[in-house]
Length: 455
Image (tube, rainbow, N blue to C red; front, side, top):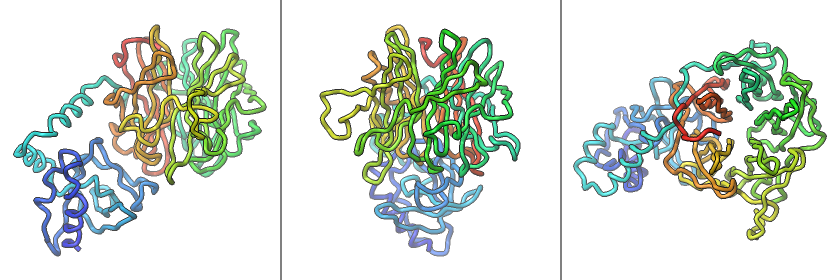
């Protein structure tokens, strides 16, 4: 088996060394036959960590995450279409990893081999990595979560996401989503904090799917405003099935106070587009901003293209926060944009090709700003991106401003579903972290110097 694995590693990764990261240059030099010996390889990737999957597919469950440069023992390999996967043993378990993430060289060997070659593409790669490392960003508040599920028998034993967080009347208010199990209905709970890190929850959810006529399985909070008259307004999205990509719409509910009673509108505030539209399958993650003319809603739209899920960011406007109109550029004639247009597409930067979601937008005196999650695929680890706009419609991404990735915390397998709040000179980023036991917790990262203008 060792001889076959070495041969396969050379064929798959050796020929592609010219286009892989610097650590893989010269991979084939050490490829050789060593029957009956352990095949040791090393993880290589531009990300800090790499996912290890239960099956040879990125759609399968993530077993754990591996640090870049970690040694692995390869035991088997398989081909899935044009992709090659290797089964490896690690110090924390075993699973499958894609061939593009492996090298026969240790990080030390790779660095030495690179130094002996002509420095053609190396400076550009090193400069990009250095720029990313020095880019201003968020710092993890603590290695432990700030919010976890309730008791084992509680309705929120497993947390889904931080939902929406606002600061009002001297308190942080969190409208989080929780459930007893991922296969069970998801509801919205409420918690408060004096400092943003120590939270006290209410015993029961403040809004459940049963209370919303068009919510068949789950409701997830995403944006909350407090109007001048004291009315609390929540924007949430629904999910019709337990499938994470389940179809759904965006809804609105109001209440006299944060604990309710919350009254949902009779119909959705925003629905998916028509057949073949860029947002035909689902709309979610609404982020509502007050404007001079009313309200702007940035949201995630989802479709399926070439057997892959695709998510992009759209825009809708409203004079009253109730009746919404999707942004539509009459100059676009493609069927996918017949009813509305994308304002921030998937694939606008290399890190976000395929899945751009969860927008958080605010206005400064001369600019609109957005942070959002992006990933090459729905089932891959996400990283936080940053973009700016002069009009809220045409956005310019900061290609190398990967301002935060969850892998700063060991033990998590996938992050996402964020809430962003600015208060008293600090940006608070709350994000869900999915753990290996299929539970989810909420972590906090903060920044006091990331941006030079307040929202």
